[in-house]
Length: 228
Image (tube, helix red, strand yellow):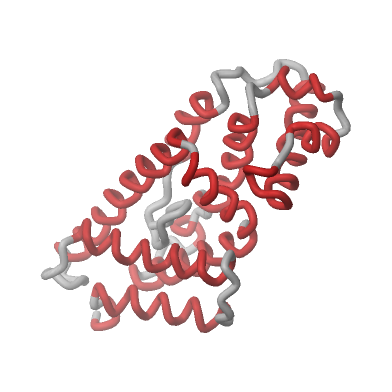
């Protein structure tokens, strides 16, 4: 149950869901038809990520992005409408790393406990890799209504999937039946994501091994999976 800003465990957003939102966030621009155009767009996205990580969203300038991509300033508008649009494209690349970890395929026969622990660890490692961009995303969500709404919608989608998994575990007698699945999913997800933000963005010093072990134990204890 992994979420871009809202926590961990097993249920991953499908690639189809990610594809549905790409055109909406990129200003409706179609992908460049030529290989040269695709390379130019990709170079702009790579450069933009570097600038957003360095300067944050508010202080990032389109001229710095085009300079980083070694293209003329006007070239930017062939591919993107504005700074928000290219930030959305950068976020797409972030989602590929944060959301599509394919935990189930890698350990298909694992127990629910093992799946949750593996997904939590992978999420935390991905968050650490992308900490500067996650900080920029947090910044944008505070000031841009579209990104804020997108985050809320995706959070709700992940919560429902996570809650469904918890309910399935309860129905099989493997998780605490007294828990409300949706509330439990939200509480546990927030716990992981906010700890990740505190450690990897705000700089709280917690060793990775201790962080992973603690969050996993809290997850398993909350669901009483350690008792099965």
